[in-house]
Length: 199
Image 1 (cartoon, rainbow, N blue to C red):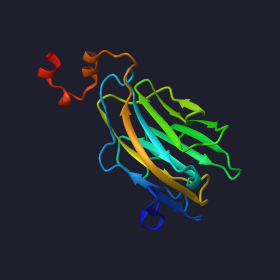
Image 2 (cartoon, rainbow, N blue to C red):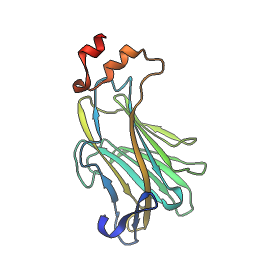
Image 3 (cartoon, one colour):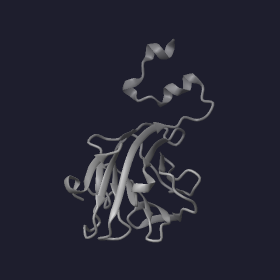
Image 4 (cartoon, rainbow, N blue to C red):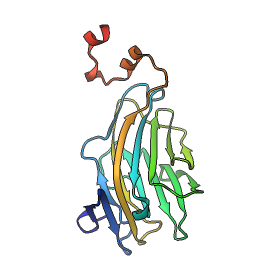
């Protein structure tokens, strides 16, 4: 993609308008630092990214994670999740574990602008509220950094694509009813305070 030509900040969003004839035109944002450092026990308390976009100004986009910071994560990614609107106006959710190992589900209702990506050691999940959910059989590796990319993506090469990205939220999902003392098990090592734990 070409950020200088195709992207701008407008109306509370990062707007990428990739014109026809731009190849795959992957234009958007890439984290400068790791967007996620996976700590232990991510199978019990997974991580989650909630991506919000303006559905009226978005025809297709990709959320990708990779252990390497690279402008094109397609060839080496942990997850490549795309939500693409076809020419008929319907959306389809795709989850690629590798370039050749993927799943797809159509959206049967109107997309309201949110995509959730959940990452655990026993699998990755992409889901749309009230819509389909796709899960992979393998997931994150403990003690690993991952970079995040959110880019406009056309349904096919050289087709136009638009993305109006409003926000990306990262959070950790702790089990329901977890006692307070057990929450300490999920802190990063440098955030653990022994004196506070003993108190």
